[in-house]
Image (cartoon, rainbow, N blue to C red; front, side, top):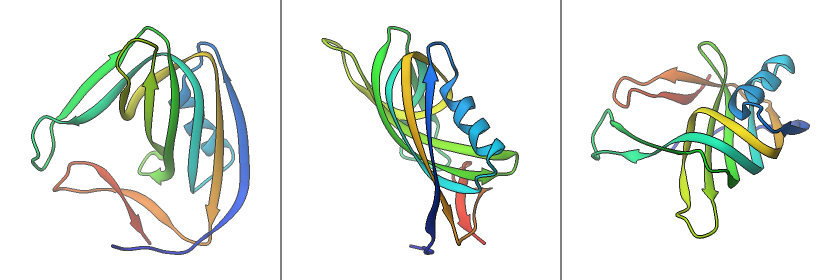
Amino acid sequence: MEYRTGEIRRVFWARFNDGENLRAGLEDLARRENVEQGLVMVLGALGEARLVVGPKEKTLPPEPVWTGFQDGREILGLGTMIRGPEGPDLHLHLAAGRSGRETLAGCLREDGLVYLVVEAVMFEVTGLSVRRTPDKASGLNLPGFF
């Protein structure tokens, strides 16, 4: 385990409206406000999304298993916003449910389109430097301390 200590500086409270792209919107907010790293919480509903719900096999690098929905689902999610090689990089895990159907839980790696509304709170963390950098073994951009 590695860790550093930081402090919460600013808090951003955002509302995303029907049809907006949640992932792109959160990354755009971090870019506009120059957020280097932070914590993100979301709740509301997505009309459609694609999620990674696990690896096909427990190997490195993992081959992702994708699934999605287009039927409108309630969501609750938690993630990190960390500066990557190309700017803000959101890592958001969420659960998406709908009455009488399965609840999905996974990583939103592609666009998620808002249905009705999503509320998001981003806590900017300062006093440390975290960056996403490529990891050869996993094939992912993992957080590292600098």
